Length: 133
Image (spheres, helix red, strand yellow):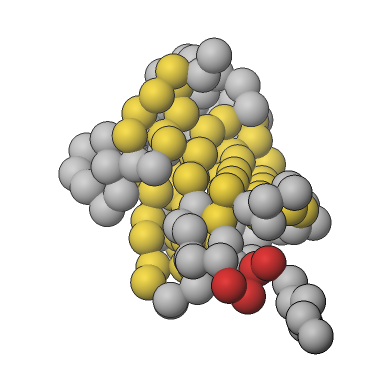
């Protein structure tokens, strides 16, 4: 007799691919939306925090967690905000093992130096600036 169990129990952990970006091109002082999208992760234990100047932003909205046929999950958190000069915007992601990783808007790698906002048409994917296609 064979006992069926969810595939997710036996699947190895897979860290999320993280995208940090804005809905519209960044203009200082003009309303926009900051988004943190995590995809292709497993298991479905994840926490996201959107931050400005290392402080959690209030009134964030989070999508329902969804999965694909291969049990890879995805989740998006967003907030309306008005970009300010010199303020660093980021998304803290804690997945499965509790390790916190910070992904900054316009940064070349998680937790790295530099700052500011991203240019039009770019987003951060796993800490690397990539063009949006």
